[in-house]
Image (cartoon, rainbow over all chains, first blue to last red; front, side, top):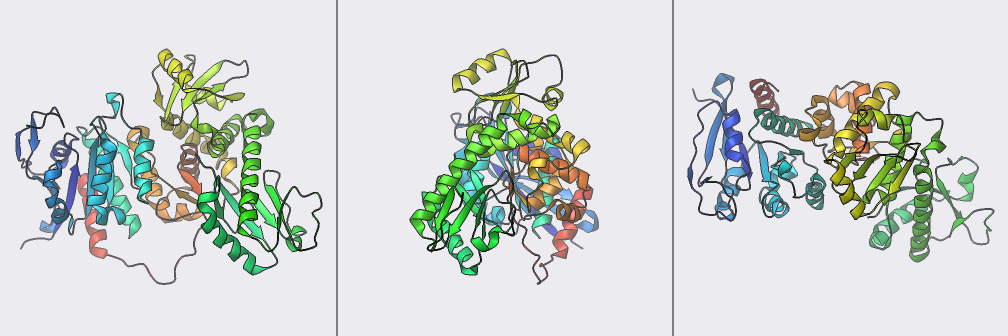
Length: 178
Length: 318
């Protein structure tokens, strides 16, 4: 008998580490939809996600949590609202070394406002040690402008412990809000 | 950057408090600083009518204003507001009070020796808290020891600190106390960064705050506050994973708590709550906020969601 299914979304800017984050926690080999990156101005990555990344966390009783990683480019924004429906929570990854990280944060916060308003979201800021770029205080201000006080952590998306930190904060936020 | 102050009105006319609340809302954009009306008489600005004056003993740290009824003359009162309270005079009254509070804080904060009865750690906490409130904290600051040597340079805009002493742990050195906080320029900050690589200021503040709680409990600058709320989460990615801190952050960003109610809500020991509050305050994330009484209607519970979260935690080892 099929168990119940839940959904967690991992979204954010191109190159922030969404694919890597899913790979770090998924029970199954992650299904990745990558192609050659032709937008080298946005990111120097060789490849980029062009549809959805998919991973799973299998719970007891046949239940499972589906993890969807959205592509980062704006042209895929049509799928954000579809994916957000019924999601347990949202992990938003921002590349601090990108061209406009604060604007990107604002874009994603607005796109996923239903989840952010329920405190079912957490922000991970990657590449903080790249030198210049906004400070954590700048990220707090973007959130405060929207009346939000979400977790914002500087992380290394390649480190499983950092991804788990984001998830812990996400789950604790959801519990405290209910 | 506007400061945040609290205001308490002790009036023999109940409607007067409602009028003040309404005016605060209307005048918000015309005031030099932000004001919050609170019930506790331990606010930054205590405004009293004649009837309340005999019943209250203002603290030395408070600025006191007097409400004057028609025909009443102020006796030794510096800040006065004539009744009935009107918008323009009220605005001027609050802006003058802001100036007095800032001057008082600046004088107290730049002379930590004046708090001689406090331990160095408490004095440091008071100084940093007062500096944040005064607005001068937005400039780079040098922290000098008794001989005038620079211990550290801090930049709250960037959230960074440069440590100038190599002979010990900077947290330990700061806990021994510093004599003076000296405001600097942006160029001074750039020069300081050439001497050593800046580190995260919140890491240092976090250690200071939690270590203070181990020996002295809740910081003295927090003890008269009615309740607390977080305006942002500490960055546990930089500070280090802290399970108790995550639970406290989740609760305190969503509603105000006293230390005791936070301990109950999160099942975290009160000593850890004190450390969290000290540290969050030093990081500029904590504000005073009155606690709202629990609502009578039960919260909507979602047992299925609670169950999957619990199982997900178990799965991930959280």
